[in-house]
Length: 285
Ligand code: PEP
Image (cartoon, rainbow, N blue to C red):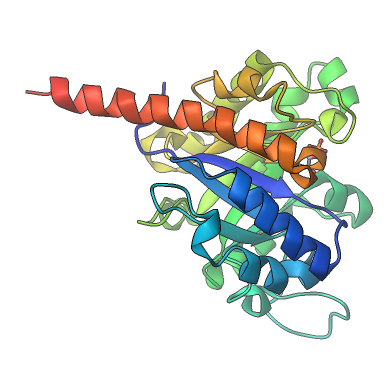
C-alpha cells in the first residue's frame, strides 16, 4: 500500500570523499541536475564539508520547479550531547550546518563497533537538536544465506528504537523526523544490489516491527529507503515497489550523471503518487 503522505527521498552518502572545495562544486553540479518536483534530496558530505555544501545549495539554482531545495545531512552524530570525546561531533554542533543525519550506517557498526543501543542514543541525541534521522539497518550475507535476514533486521529496528517515543518520531510539516534505510551489508559498495521484491519484503518486516513498538498507522507513516549499490540503471527496481520510498545512495551519489538519473526516476514515482492521491481525493464524495 502507498501511504499518501510519505515523501520520496533520495539521500547521497558521500562517505570519506571530497574536500570542502570539491564538495561545494559537486553539490552545486548535482543540485542543478536534479531539479525534479516531489523528491526530497539530501546530501550527506563529510563533517568538514557541511558548511561548503550548505552554502552551495542555498541558492535558487538548485531548487526544483516546485521550490524544494536540497537538504544537508551529516553521516553520523555522537550519542552524548557534550563531553570528553576527542574528535567527535555532537548533535548541537551540527544544528545550523545540517538538518538531517544518518545513524547506524553499517560501516560505522563495523569499524566503530556501534551497537543498536548506542545507535538508539545517537538517534535521541539527533532528535534533541531537531535533526531528521536516517536510521540504517541491514543484514550480513551470512544472515541472508541462513534465512535470518528478517530476524536480524527486526532485532536492529527494535534495539535502535527501544528507548524512543514513537509519538515523537512521526513527520512534521517539513518532512519525516525518522526515515529507515534498509541496507543489506552485502550490497553496500559491492555492485551487487538486492532485488526489489526482497527490499519490499524487508520494508514490510520493518513496518511490522514499528507497529509492534507502538508507531501510529502500523508504521505506514515512516519512509523506508533501500540502499546498496543503487544506480540509475537499477533504481526502478526499487521505486516500483510501493513500500519503498526512495534510496540511500553511496558511490553513485558522487557522480552527477548518476544522481541526475536516480532523481529523475524517483521523480516519476513521486509524480505518480501525487496523481494517485489527487484522483483518490476527487473520487471522495
Ligand atoms: C551507502 O553507503 O549507504 C551505500 C548504500 O553505498 P553504495 O551505494 O556505494 O553501495
